[in-house]
Image 1: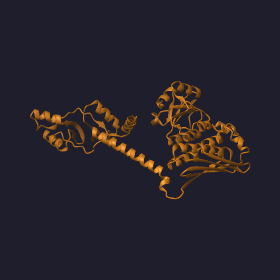
Image 2: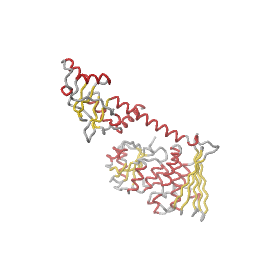
Image 3: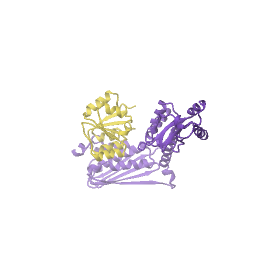
Image 4: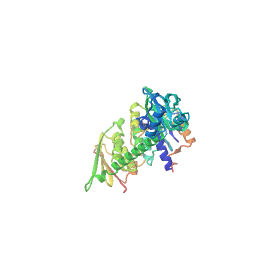
Length: 305
Length: 120
């Protein structure tokens, strides 16, 4: 299971990362006119096993330890590189994803691939298996670090602020009858709660209840205000509007009882599930309503320790 | 079932979220009543596919409230650009199919996509 997670993560990175992020940019090269002894000295000093042969930035061939050994055997170590190099070159473009490099390593048995820039066709780097692994590890570490700091920032809002009691208050003004924007405030609230580090399960309950509340204000009233108190142990929401009020609260609490007009139903709401659903999603709910004056709805969700 | 498969089964066109088609959906819900969604999808719904004939912004807001990430509009309906924008901002995949709601649901169910009451 964990292997699956890791390998799918690595695959994701391998598709995301470009060759240029992983490649070595300072390429050690030789010129076609250099001798095989020059090649040997470079290979020895840099502890590598192959070199691109470059002339004016253009990739002409590849020369490797084997090529050098062949020359030694034939006693031609002072010969020029251009007569001994491999000219059939497998290369890769710098803008290709790393996954292409994997596939190339699988297909060809070379230890490295020269990297060309697609437009100019000039050599811009070289890539080995080591480069690929280093790049993947670096990205994994970076992603992990970001996830961790994100988690910490989220978790600690109430721990970071030293006081005897910390309350974050959020206020949303909801305009009545403005159906086009119905739901927007609850969506904003969702982001705010997640940002404050509230667990997704709790956030979902609050947002569902607030969405129902927002709908009610938009459908039935001329507007109202939703206030949210986020505290360490609970989230309390209060919604106030200035009318028309609910004639029979008990009836309004019955699932399926609705006084919503047709235009609301056509838009997928007004099924008489609002208030019962708010009750379902919350730990405490209280509603005060006076016809002609307005409604005051309050609900609370407790945060589990 | 990943979204590529869903797309193929109901011959759907992807409107946005093209890069998220590897996401898995485990349950399907065919519904034009957003109230119903708010009332009945309140568990972890990250893997619910919503099929609906409604294309207003409230479909996105409602889905957002219950964490639905994949929505398919049926009967060839297409949402306005502002709805697509809302979906994009939330990383929600939008698709549309010419099939009616019942047939879309039926085809997906036949291929093994479960209903929301069957989730274990």
